[in-house]
Length: 56
Image (cartoon, rainbow, N blue to C red; front, side, top):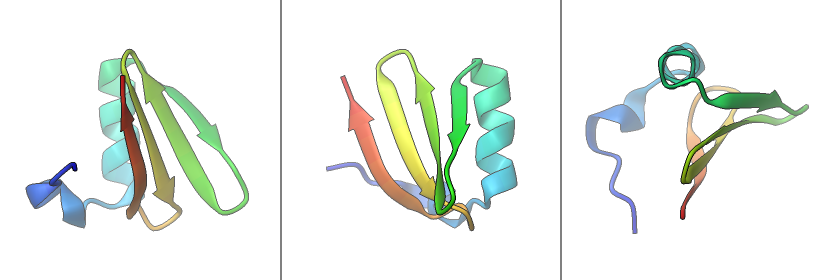
């Protein structure tokens, strides 16, 4: 289980700013965005709400 804490209220722009800092790959789909970095994948809705987090 992942507890998001204060980042639970982030908007999409906040996530995109973090992905730029972390040099993550960003893929946008019609209904969401996928952020992918070393050991993590975060799927977001277009409003920035977290839909799924995968850690490896």
